[in-house]
Length: 78
Image 1 (cartoon, rainbow, N blue to C red):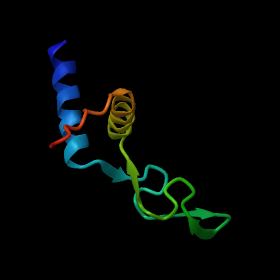
Image 2: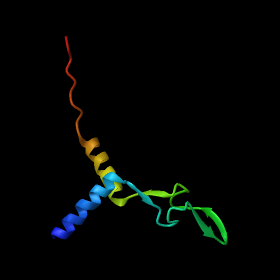
Image 3: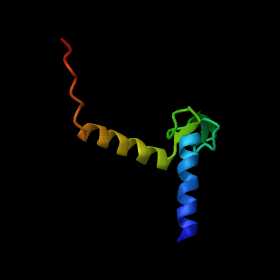
């Protein structure tokens, strides 16, 4: 159990420090070979990077939390 918690903590730190990783399909090259010709990678669209799964989950959680939070009332000064 401690190993899993340690791994998740390390992955959370990694997602915060480096939210992007090399594309898995093109291995960070931005191009894939199709029918003998180099083409733009369909997964990363030639950007060479992808958002990590943990960072994607964090962003979704943050958007959901912010959408459900009431705005703080503003004080009206006289």
